[in-house]
Length: 353
Image 1 (cartoon, rainbow, N blue to C red):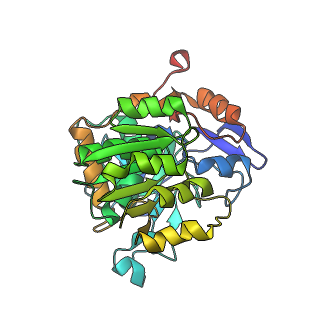
Image 2 (cartoon, helix red, strand yellow; image 1 turned 90 degrees about the vertical axis):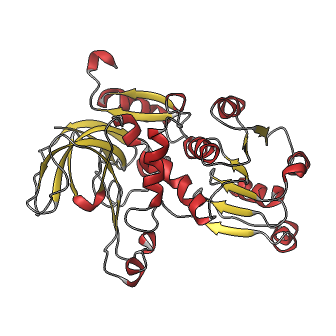
C-alpha cells in the first residue's frame, strides 16, 4: 500500500508499506478515503516536532471499513467512518470522570503512533465514529477539526444568543464561525490580518470582520462597543499577539476560549493583565474535542450540522489530490502555515489530480 512518510529534516515522500493486519478482537481495518493536514502537523514535519521518525501522520481522516475483529459487532464492511484520534486509557480517574483529554496514559493516532496518511490503517473500534448515510468522505475528514471549535463552545455553555468573536480565520476559525452561526449566535465577528481570509469569513457566516493589521486593539474594541455584553471570544490563531488581543478587546465579563496552541512564550503587560481583573473575564482553556459520553457531544453536533447542510467545506480546501499531489503541496509549504486546507484523497486517480 502507499503511505506518506515523514523523515527527520522535513523530507516527505510516498513509500510502499506492508498492509496492516488485525491484531486484536476489537481492531478494525479501514481503507482510508480522505485525510487532512493539520496545522499541528507542520512542526512535526519541518521542525523535528514528531515523537519519532520516520512517521506516517494523519489524525483527521475518514475511511471505509474493510474487516473487523471478532468482538466488533456494530460496524460492518462498507461503513463510512471518521477517525477519533485520541486513545485514552478508559481506566484512570480522569477517564472515569469522562475527562478524556486529561488522561495521563493516552495514545494518539497520527502523532504518538502512525496515522491515516496511508491507504489502509488498523484502528481500535473505540477510535472510529460511524458516519450516517449521506455523509461524504471529505466531510468525514473534517469531523476532527470541526469538533475542536465545538468543544470550546461546549465548555462555554453554548453560543445561543451570544456575540461570538473569533480571532484567527484559519481552518479551525472558519469552521467555528459556521458552527457558531448555525447554533444560534446573535452575531459572529471574524478578526484576522489576511484580507482574503476576512472576505471568505463574510461569505461563510461572519456578520462583522476586522483586520487587526489595520486596526489597533483600541479601535476594534470601540467597534465592538455596542456588542460588548454576552461575548464569547475564541482565540484560534495560537499567537501571543492574538491572545493579548483577545483580552484587550473583550467586553465586561466576557468568556475567552483559548484554542490555539502557542509555540512562543506569552508575556502579558501589566495593563493587559489588569483587563482580566477589571473586566472580570472568564478564561477557558480548551484542549482537543471530547466531552461527555465517548467520544463526546461535539461529534453528535458535527453530524447534525453536516446533515442540515450548514457547513461549507469547498471554500476551505486549497488542495485535494492523490498521494503525489499531497506530497508536493506539503513540501511547498517549507514550514510555513497553510493557506487553505491540504487534503490527501486516496479516491483520486493520478489523472484526476
